[in-house]
Length: 221
Image (cartoon, rainbow, N blue to C red; front, side, top):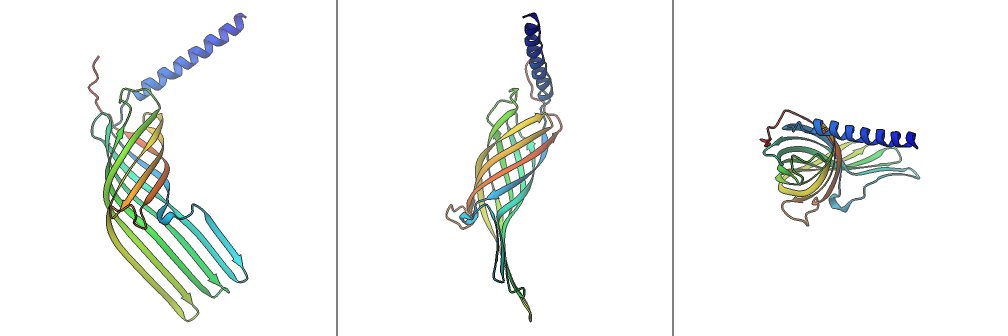
């Protein structure tokens, strides 16, 4: 009986110690950071899948709507960050007929966005989970590239245009330390500020971020 009590007390002490360690780590409120994230963007309501077809001399590969982002953020106040994001998301379809004729279609979006992220929990919260809301706007660079390869030559058609747009959404940071965290978020992009635009749609992201610097919160003693 004594041994069980001692083990229980030791487990409680270890839990309290780990909580106090996290508390002391998270007491350092960071001011600046950089993050990387992969994403799936449901543009054109396309499938989130990779399709490979091989049938009687016809070969095709269809990779849809994946991409990546890099983003920088800086604290504006205790619960708000300013963000700059640069992304590249697209889909590729390649078709080959009898090993001689090949068609490649590439659809891509390169957003350059400025926005804000607002944490829902207080900066004084010791929770490792930090939910937030995010919104912003900027130019979306749209690309459509088609390549036709023939035995007598190649034909390349490239179309590009820039459209204004905006995004809104939310997410969650899971802070493993005061300087490092994992991230999951969901955003809706309004290309040309139109929900019915071909490239408008939901985007789902997963990544991580590093933080540095120190933000003085002015906490009362």
